[in-house]
Length: 125
Image (tube, rainbow, N blue to C red; front, side, top):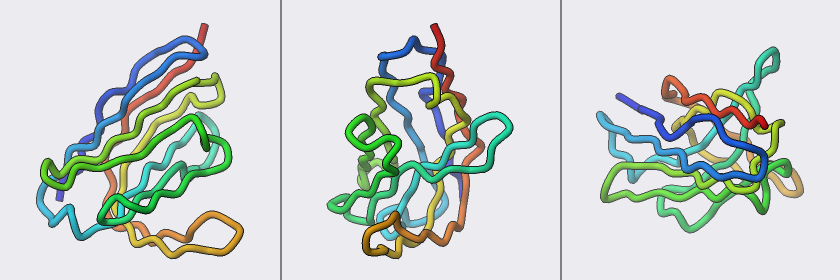
């Protein structure tokens, strides 16, 4: 199983980045997928998730309206378009597989399986 993130970098506040997670070694189309980030000195924070078919998406309140998760099952690839970036979005961003269990009124519960190595996103002027 391999998950490889790319697309991170340094950007000014208000800028955009598109993260990519290229996967191999498992049947991508049968796995729910997530993006998780970890800022320096803080614990992991779930950011977004998408179901196997790509028709259902979930977002943390902190990124709702700014980030868009998507997937291409033909290419075994997960994406996240990040717009209107803020300094507080600075973190190491990971993609991960894991089943999504929706919770009414709050973010979903996710049982993570496999993780990538992460790609660094830095938002600074």
